[in-house]
Amino acid sequence: LGDVYKRQSTIKAYVNIIYGCDKFCTYCIVPYTRGKQRSRRHQDILKEVNELKDEGYQEVTLLGQNVNAYGKDLDDNYGMEDLLEDVAKTGIPRIRFVTSHPWDFTDRMIEVIAKYPNIMKSVHLPVQSGSSRILKLMGRRYTKEEYISLFDKLRKIPNMHISTDIIVGFPGETEEDFEETMDIVRKVRYDSAFTFIYSKRTGTPAAIMGDQIPEDVVKDRFNRLLHEVQTISAEQ
Ligand code: SF4
Image (cartoon, rainbow, N blue to C red):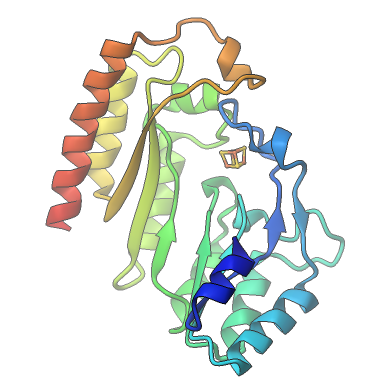
């Protein structure tokens, strides 16, 4: 993807910083298909960003399945906070990064985002569900309350735009669980949200969980959620 974009645009470029993922969310096939997380050396990433800047690129997006885990598989005590700061210091006009797992988001990362004007105030922060019970079944490693606390810290940064991903109909999701999702959506008021109907991925733990939700129930919940997120995004 990165190379394709680099060729198609002379303004924006994608820069891979980490491949694979170690999180093993129970619905996700990525750790099985793309393997364990492998971070690129920061020297190579910074060299690439500097070259892009010299070629006249205006914007880089640091790319990975979970960019916030950057560096955790290396031994150089250099994490996403350090990388973001060093990329900001290259002076390239605009920096984005995607995707962030909430569990790996640190306070220092938030400070770095706030400090540098060339880091765009835009974070994609997938919540997936508002129910702590479902989040546990998903293996997401945070509760609803922990997520909201992180969200609030990010929201304090002026002009911050926050988007999310939400899955409806995960196995075992009750009407009460779904209402928790509606509740978090109303509380935090996302600027934009991508909503998905849960779909089974063969080989993942969730695919063999009991209590798969009937299609008509999922569709009804999905439509209610979609209406809510669209209304809020339009207001935002
Ligand atoms: Fe990793 Fe994201 Fe898949 Fe979870 S959903 S296993 S964080 S790629």
